[in-house]
Image (cartoon, rainbow over all chains, first blue to last red; front, side, top):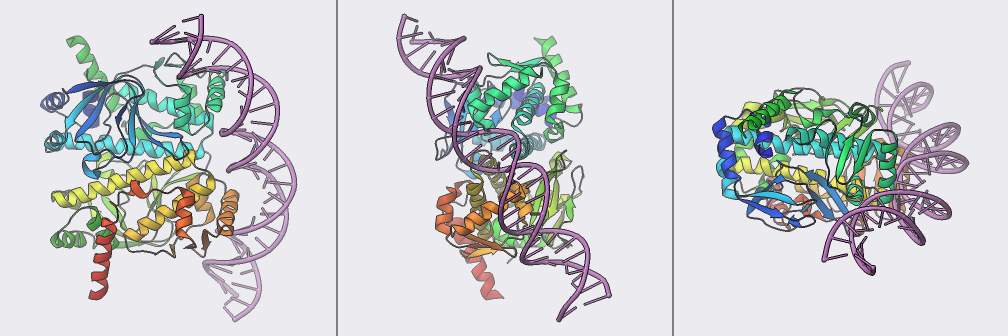
Amino acid sequence: MNPFLAKMASAAPLTSADLAELDRATQRIHYVQAKEDLIRQGDVPGDVHLVLDGFACRYKVLSNGRRAIMAYLIPGDFCDLHVAILGQMDHSIGALSRCQVAELPREEILRLTENPRIARALWFATLVDEATLREWLVSMGQRSADRQMAHLFCELHLRLKLVGLGDRRGYELPLTQEELADTLGLSTVHVNRVLQKLRRDGLIGFANGRLKLMDLDRLMAFAEFDAAYLHMAGSARLHAVERLTARAGTAS
Amino acid sequence: MNPFLAKMASAAPLTSADLAELDRATQRIHYVQAKEDLIRQGDVPGDVHLVLDGFACRYKVLSNGRRAIMAYLIPGDFCDLHVAILGQMDHSIGALSRCQVAELPREEILRLTENPRIARALWFATLVDEATLREWLVSMGQRSADRQMAHLFCELHLRLKLVGLGDRRGYELPLTQEELADTLGLSTVHVNRVLQKLRRDGLIGFANGRLKLMDLDRLMAFAEFDAAYLHMAGSARLHAVERLTARAGTAS
DNA sequence: CGAAGTGTTGAAGCAAATCAATTTTCGTGG
DNA sequence: CCACGAAAATTGATTTGCTTCAACACTTCG
């Protein structure tokens, strides 16, 4: 099951014709190696990019040489839907693992958005991205390093679940401690110590690019995680995804 | 000159008929006192709100009782354009000063966006809001408290200039030090000390709800401020605003 | 096998928080 | 217009969460 279709289906009620149309639009695939850039700051790209598999991130490089990661892009996420309007990238997109990426010509996006159900689903997705950004801002400003990290792990768990990846026991998270540091605005040394604390407390395991959720309920409680900002509407959206993935499972 | 019209005109090329249409749509006005909420977390508002005068902010209240301010809403900014799609507010909007607010029925927005030039201008504005949010995230994670505050003052200077408010010497900024603290994720004590340092260094003055820019060039250099994220396209957008405001000036 | 990247540990230093008290300003009613 | 109380700003002393620096161990891979 294409994670992009799963995400769109959970964002707005789509017909199977709509889904087929979206599926057709995302057939032009290419691959990007880990640590390569998909798009660079200043680019004026003609195509819009969509992650189908792997992890990517939005980032900026500051004058002091440090990298600031502002978002993780997981399967189903658009990288640069906005560039069609703003014209120029004000940040870069880098692959954190090997990524499978779909390229859509800008005109294809314009054509797709003439269908109001699809337009609404795309619009919904960008608004959830924005709400996620606000939650990161809150996290960064107000939460202690350990809760901030726990919060991030909770968020990724739910976002990945929405596209059928990972489960209650854990998920693939191909990040180095340095990348976590660039995300949370901490030093690598401190990230290492915080991870050790979370492990010692029996909340998580993190090794070999996989995050283990040892006690998800306690982790969520510790992070004071409230999923409202992800706008999953109770569990209605997740149920929709489960139906879709189940259907795909029997079909394959 | 209506600040909203100034902002829209700088976002996309609009005809005078477009501007007249936007003007007509924003005639339903009401007032909100300082410290009152315009909208609360969990609300499912039927109308969309637009600040015409005064300062407001997006904020969340955390479980520890602290308030996190995630954005300032200045004249010309929409408060909750997104709620039409997401359905429910995941944060609150509070007035920081007495505000003049326009209310637009949701259907009015839908009608307006059938005009592709207007739709593009609105879409542009929401994308700039998102880019601003990303810049705040970078600031919060990576910049020292003094540079962070300097950066905020530079941003507000340009955003206000875009709607014809303030000038190189300064602008009205009706904030308390506590509100600055809630924005930057600092304690009020530290905000006070950072302000004193910036004053001592001859960069700013801040008293009686007004920010004085003593040396804008040095302030921008100190903050390492790069205005690219505000997508003002060189100075073309600002020139458009200057023409509009000049025209309004001679007309009145 | 060596080299580079990643993870781990200890010690010292610093930016910012916290606690607590005091002064100044502001808003309101007498 | 002044007096009063409350809100906001300021100051000092102390503590702490995180950074920085430096060394070392482990892993991965050409």
